[in-house]
Image (cartoon, rainbow, N blue to C red; front, side):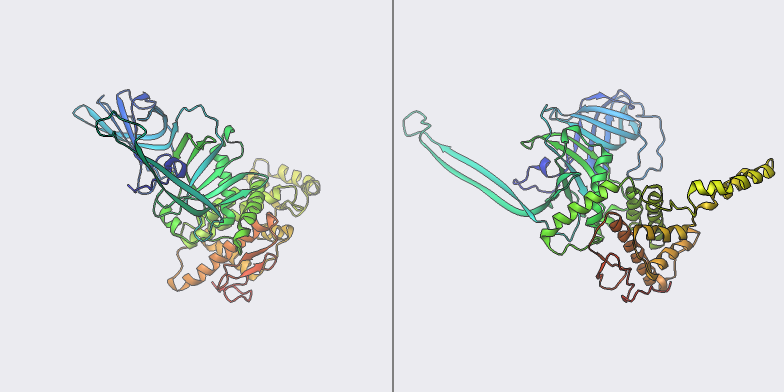
Length: 494
C-alpha cells in the first residue's frame, strides 16, 4: 500500500476503490445463495477487480462452471447489494462465482465487473470525474493546482494552585502548501471539462493516470457510453487511448456522492501504458494545447456517429496492441468502417456506386427480370442474383480512391503501398521473415499516419500533421502525401 501524503484528499484525487472494501451485511445476495455473509473487493496487480465471498451455508455459491473469461468481458448473472463499514450502499455486478466448501464454511472467488458505492448524502452533483489509465506522457499541463494543509495546535495548562484557566494557553499554527501544474481546461460547444494529471501516489505505478472532470449537466448522469464518447474525442488529439477504470460524482463543496469502479478493458494494459505517445499533430506551444485539443475533440465528438469514428478508432487502437502483421488488418478494417460510413452519408456524391442507385436499377431492371426468370428453380439462383445486383458497387480499391477524392485528401505511393500491404495478412499470410521486419514497421507507420490524415481531414483540421512514415517524424501540410522513410514520397519495398 502506498503512503498517501496528507495534502491529498484521496477520493477527490482518484477512483473510489483505493483500498480493500468489505461489504457486510449483505442485504440482497442476488444470484448467490443466502448464506453469504461478507464480500471483500480489491484491485489486483493489473487493476482488475478481485473479490472474495465468505459464508456458512455449506453450499456452492452458484451452479455454474468457470469459463475462459478475459479481462473486461462480462457475462452478467446478477447484482449483489450490501453496505460498506461506513454505511454506504454498495452494489456489485457479478458475472461469475465459484466456491469451495470446508467444514461448513464457504469461501469463494467472485468475478466482479462493476462496483457502485452510494454515500446517500442527498447532495446535488456539481461535477463528476472519469478516472483513466494510460494518459499522455509528453504533454505538459498549463494550469496549476494549489493544495493547502493547515493545522492548529493549542496547549492549555492550569496555573499553580488555581483552577483550569482557558485563557492561559499557547497556540501555534502550522501546515504545508504545494503548487503543481497538473491540468488543462477543455471547453467547447460539446463539453466543458478539466483534464487533470493524477498525483503519482494514486493508481498503478505502471501507468500515467489522469482524471477527466466533467462539468456539463452532471446531475443528469452521463451513461458509460456517453463518457466513453468524451474519452474517444480527447484520445485522438492526445495520441493515446484513455482507459476508464471508474467515475465519481461530487457536490459543489467536493463531497463525494457516489462512485463507480470497473474493470479496465485491454489486451495488455501494462504494455499499452508503456508505449510512446502518437499524436496526429504537434503541439508546438503549451498555450496552444488547450485550444487545439478543444477544437479537435469537439469536431471528432460531433462526427463520431455519422462517420463511424468510434468503430474506426477502436480498430486503430487495437492495431497498437497486436503484432504488426495483424495490426495492418485492424487499420484497414477501421479505415474501411469510416469509408463506408462516408458513403452512407449525404456528403458523398457517389455513395460508393458506379451509377446512382435509381439510374442503375432503371437500366438493369428488365434484364435482371429476364435473368431471374431463367434461373428460377436452379441451384444457387438467389446467390447469383445477389452478386449481379451488387455489380454497381465499387470494388474496395476503387472505393478507397473515390473516398480520398471526395474528402479532398491527396494520397501518394506511400499510402497506396500501405493499403496493398494489408492484403496478404488479411488472407492467411503468416509472420514476415526477420530481415523484413524494418520494412513492415515503416509500412505500419505509414498506414497509421494515413488514418490520422483521414480523420484530420474529416474534422476539417487546417494545420500540419506528423508524418510517422519518415525518419525524424517531420511535420507536413495536411494536403501533402506521406514522404516515406527518406522523405522522397517513395515507400520501402515490402
